[in-house]
Length: 371
Ligand code: AHM
Ligand code: MG
Image (cartoon, rainbow, N blue to C red; front, side, top):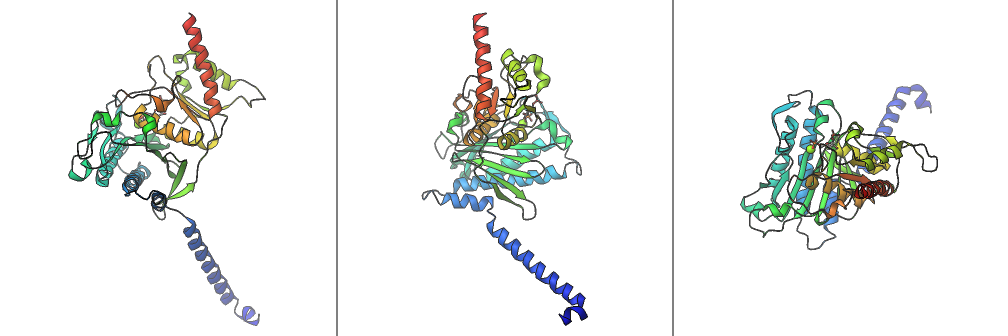
């Protein structure tokens, strides 16, 4: 006591020391609780005694490329990576520099994994074949939108990467063939997305639930933050580009009106949220409950979104989280793909909301059939 009165500053320093020790002790404890993506993959791999670690390798390489893309996305604006690259992609859309950068990073990462024999991406007309000795023996193929939400790249709004993983159909040791990529969504062995938002997250499923990992920039690792994500069975958010209203069919128009009507029992009107980045719109609705719609329109009779690398992976994740995904008349995961860049309408999210929109779409078809 006397010591404290005579030397108050010593007490101050002692208190700081104890506090710091406690703080760093707690940090170590907290870190111990943290499970990184790689640790998680390894832990889950041990559940399959015959697993050789190929899938873990593949996913971990996707994670690495995701971090590289994240780094560039975060610096966008500071360096000359914004804007158009002066070319168009296979969809006839302007390619952004970051689109191309992301495409190159994922191609390089998957090739380096040595377990992937080929890749189909939004940016390439044909599938990319990895024809080196190691990759030819790779049993996986990947479909991917390396950077989705292009219109939001230049304006600091969330964008994402979407990926879908299959086992190849062609024989190991040969070049990947186009039919390896034209598999139904229900044959996916894994699917995921990375959202480059206010924080960066990697969310994926292998068909046993959905888990989300947030990038901790201080240690450069994706850490398990959202364990076993379940989407609410019902929600109050509807997400659609209402600027296309006049081009929608009557069923969709009626559903939009339904969302806007006042009804206390069903807690309507709902709230409208639309970012225009599929990953960001889906991620929000997945956590909060809601429905995302990209219907067919007069100008896009099959909708805008691509089956292989946008709708299928999102549908797999949403279903694994307890939600639903349909094209309006078929479960997305059961659609037989005909081409790499095929488009389909998409209605996905909380089960009850998707069921409701389906009622409107069926009624519309019955009316049209009678006319
Ligand atoms: P992109 O692959 O060229 O980025 O287009 C896909 C994006 C999705 O992220 C988003 O859901 C949709 O396009 C938005 O389209 P629109 O601007 O017509 O509403
Ligand atoms: Mg895209």
